[in-house]
Every structure is written in C-alpha cells, then in structure tokens.
Image (cartoon, rainbow, N blue to C red; front, top):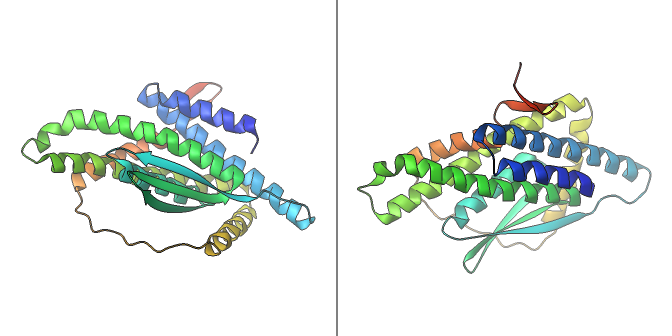
Length: 243
C-alpha cells in the first residue's frame, strides 16, 4: 500500500474522531472498505510477482501499546480488529503497566491495522464516556471495582461489535472483487501463519473473569455503529445504504 493510500485512510479516521456520530459512521465505514480493497489489490500484485519469481512484500511485525485503566480491554478490542481484517495474526503480552499487541502480517496490512486500531481506541473511549454518563446511576450502589469493570466491559463489547461489522464488510468486498480473490487471500494468510508458527512463542493462559453483560451488550452495539454503520460516501454526500 502506498503512503498516499495510508494518508487518505488516516485522514478519514482522524475526521471520524472529531465529528458527529452519524458522519463518523460513514467516514469509518469508508476507511475500512478502502483498507480491505487496498489489501486485496496488494495481495493480487504479490501473487503475480511470486509467480514471476520476483520479490514480494515482506512479512513484518508492528507493536501497539496500551496503557491506563482500560489497557486490557483496548488490547482485546485491537485483537478483534486484527482477526476481523482477516490477513494477519495478533499476539499479546503484558509489559509492566502496559498491554502490548503485536500484529504480524504483510507490511501494508499491518500498517493499515495499526491506523484503524488507534482510531478505534479513541472512538471506544469517547463512546464509553457517553454511555457512562447515561448509565452511571445503574451502578450507584456498586463498588468502585464494579463501576470500573462495567466501563471495561463496555469497551470489550465495543471491540466485539467492531469485529462483527468489519468482518461483514470484508466478506462483502471480497465477494465484489470476484472469483479467485478469496484463494489469493487464503494463501497470503497461510504464509503469515507459517511465519508465526516459526516464531518462538510462549503460551499464555486466560484468567477467569466475571462479565458485566449489560455493559458489554451496549458496548457491542456502539462498536457496530461506530465502526461501520449502514452508510456510505458518494460524491461527498452521506447516503443511507440502498438509497
């Protein structure tokens, strides 16, 4: 992916972080679809170059760190985004007071994933604060831990909602791209998996958690709406899908 394409996606997402919720939905949807389209284009180019015996894009790793009270929830969200984009592998680690997401994939893919995750980090925290102002009274008799857990699980729900919507968009773009595209992408993902399998990784265990279903459900809904919505951009105007 060229720097110009990365810049365009970054500008769309930056605007989505500082505009109305309705416009943010359309901008982020547009950015995500561009990401998938560009990833398909790059995969096809790489597949053709490989057949011709030429060099192709390298597999690399980018590190995304999260800090603060909700770092593990943001890590969970970032992991969901990587899986939803479909061509990379997420790896996680705790380093001191930081949670770190390692994104392994082809260079252009990890670039776009990092840009998207950083934008969604901002959007998730904003959405969580708005939700909390409307629902804090529900937790007035709970402990500080209960209130913090509710906000944490809202962000986790946001991440799971984002996964559903991004994955749905990805499958639609692949279908629109035509036959053979899915096979090229499967081969690309296989090479990433083989790269990760060759790395020296330590297995980690999942700690048992108590879940706040109310907070997570609302976060899930916010994640779906903030990330893709049901709107698109046409000639600078926001149109309802199917209009």
